[in-house]
Image 1: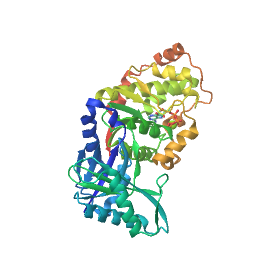
Image 2: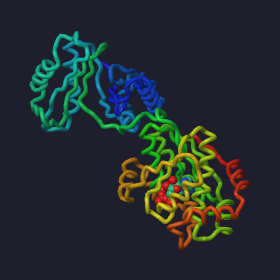
Image 3: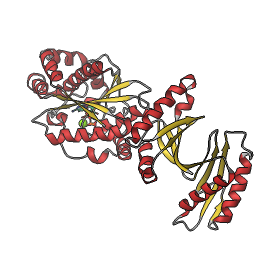
Image 4: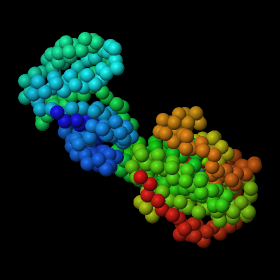
Length: 389
Ligand code: ATP
Ligand code: MG
């Protein structure tokens, strides 16, 4: 009897001829997520099996796998030979574990016979095994409609797999199967959630953060690194670019109309982000903006922001209320870090009366008053890179 993790995958089954590619990517993501455990990841007919997880690491491994995009659900399972006695013994030991501390529980057996050479048909496996479990565990009863748990038996080519738990995974597609995007990450609630949503669709994420030392502190920067680490626990490693933004921000503040500072700042952030994106192969920009959340997120302001770059800009939160974003931030585990009270460079220079409906021509003219080109080069030259795992 060998402990193994059975992994069911999400949308990959839709992928037709590309399926082997998606499966290989998922297997790679699983190995990376479980590092440094020396696991063996194999696939067989629509399932992935992870062998070699020591029993004492099963809980932690389960937790890590529920963050791997592309996984529909996982079941800690036992692998045995395709021998009826062994199958029954494995089922009993799993049910015994499942029943500890339970006075009563209902169950149902679900069997799949992928290897048709196996002597018993699926429905016979369910009936006979169900009867044996009822005999061994008086506190059990059968409920075929809404059981408290089900005992799964999968008879496959090499072995049989038995499990009594199914834990839902994150869904989505394996990171790296759908290109590469650059997330503009602030220290706020929204941008980590935006990054999580795009990564879930299989997109590799890099991130860029603008800081304005000494107006923003070392702690504010640390907070962004921490948020990136939380994002990376789902998205795999995330390359984080830290861009010094003080010179540009002061120039905007001193030389351009006060009411336009936020929109102009956004445009310069986008331009620099695009340059960094192109240099590292990212094909799109991602922000945490949502329509009307603040003055810089009206349709007119977003239009003025988009005008500064050629790359597509993805805003997965565009139609979300703040409350919906907060719910997602809590679910992904970034919320508590996001609300730590360290200043962001946008909040330091926020104008008292920002334009809410900027005219594109006015914004372009204001920007043209200052020659930012050298400042942009300097900011890029002084950008720091951190690989966050
Ligand atoms: P949060 O800060 O995550 O998103 P917010 O409501 O505070 O959301 P803004 O400050 O208006 O939003 O910023 C809008 C978006 O611009 C952010 O979601 C983020 O993508 C980007 N952004 C803002 N500040 C920075 C920064 N200092 N560095 C990188 N990106 C930033
Ligand atoms: Mg913010």
